[in-house]
Image 1 (cartoon, one colour):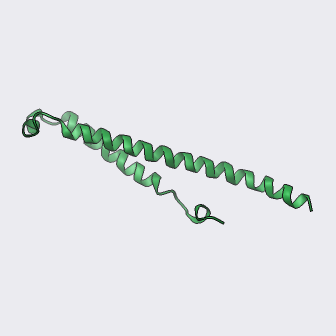
Image 2 (cartoon, one colour; image 1 turned 90 degrees about the vertical axis):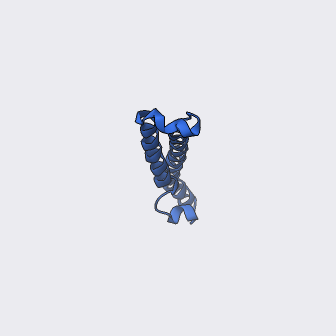
Image 3 (tube, one colour; image 1 turned 135 degrees about the vertical axis):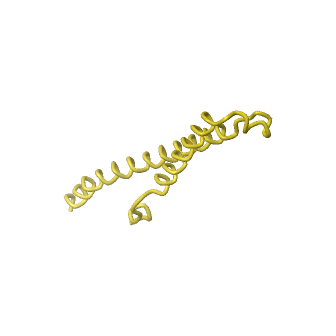
Length: 90
């Protein structure tokens, strides 16, 4: 039994969801906010930029967590067949 078998949830899923939601919120705020508030930052809409960065990071974490979940499911589905073959050879 490995540590992956004992863990209930992959930490990448909730972290990815959190960063994705925060990225969407920050991107939307940056797009609908008053452009005058960005005068102090040389007109750079830093909220939209960092919102996109958070959104991309969250999407990557979600994709990695989903990929890991699919691999674990296929690995678990293959285990009984392997165990049956091993016990049948005796």
